[in-house]
Amino acid sequence: LILLLFLLPLLTSSQSSHDESLKVILCSSLICDPPKECDIYEGVPQCKVPPTTTTPTPITPSVSNPSTVWPTLPTFPTFPPFQFTPPPPPPAPPLPFVTTTLSPSSTSSPSVCSLFPDTGPCTRARIMWYFDTETNSCQRFSFSGCGNGNRFSSRYQCELRCLTGDKESEKTDEV
Image (cartoon, rainbow, N blue to C red):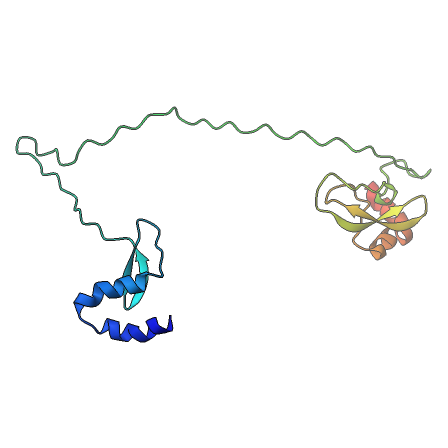
């Protein structure tokens, strides 16, 4: 390889009769995938597609029929038009079973704090807080992105709504 680099300037400065010898020497280390062939460009061997030597023959119009300039185009098969049928709608999710504990004084809908922690059928799982009526405290649970209103972003929000503000929230839930 060092000898090749040393001989390269000498070989490139030689006459055109040595160009083919130079090409053989430089291309000996290069393997080209067919139809490419080794060619020397600015002293560097490269794999190139050889230029085509055939030129297309133009069709000349005949005197008797001047409109016939191009050969007849191939015929393509015809297909029936595509008719799009939309897919059926997905089945409705099952209604969740809700158990609520109503206070004796409340005769309308319960507050969100008395709802069970509903994880929901969606797929965006994240940790939220719900109010547990049995322990009278806020607990963490995995919320899927859909479910009931007994979910809070923080323990503080859960306690604020369900421990300190539950009486006020029940009044606003009834409206």
